[in-house]
Image (cartoon, rainbow, N blue to C red):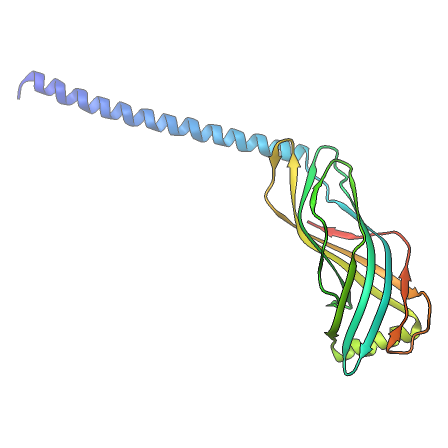
Amino acid sequence: MSAKDCDHHGGGYYWGWGRHKFYRRLCAVLLFLVIVALLVILIVWLVLRPSKPKYYLQDVTVYSLNLSSPSYLSTTIQVTLSSKNPNDRVGIYYDKLDVYAEYKNQQITVPTELPTGYQGHDDVSVWSPYLAATNVPLAPYLVVALAEDQTAGYLLIDIKVDGRLRWKVGTWISSNYHISVSCPAFLTVLNGNGNGNSVTGYHFQQISSCTVDV
């Protein structure tokens, strides 16, 4: 083998090794840039860490609450809920919100979908949906408890909101987060008398805060 051939093969080896080194450096630079970008996003997120929206129950009126044999409940309820975005620099996109009523951890109305959309900095949204259901089967112990509450003239129910939201910081929008809201409502007889099966109305009118989990 001539010296020329040796020079040729040696040059190819060094060129191949140099190209491999170049690709390694390029990958290292790209990885560094990705890490820096993620750190910037993390720092911005920590600085502007969003506070959970605040929910308030403003009004609840039970227009009908009827027990039928053997253990079925039919009801019509109107509620007024408000939500405030307490953040100065973070907006909220509500992608889905369903509201319903519970009695002693059992759902007694079908979910009603609330209007969704964007809630800006310090904005307040107010909803007044009707919640209703017909012939909802109740466990026997709930039938007894509800009849006793109706006879006594008071009722404790929970208004629940379940949905998804996204945070907006500048032009950046987060992925979906689950939101769960629970608003207890202590109701008293508005008019009429409880007879163990039906009451003409219960009413609640005292603004109270709700528990919010995101």
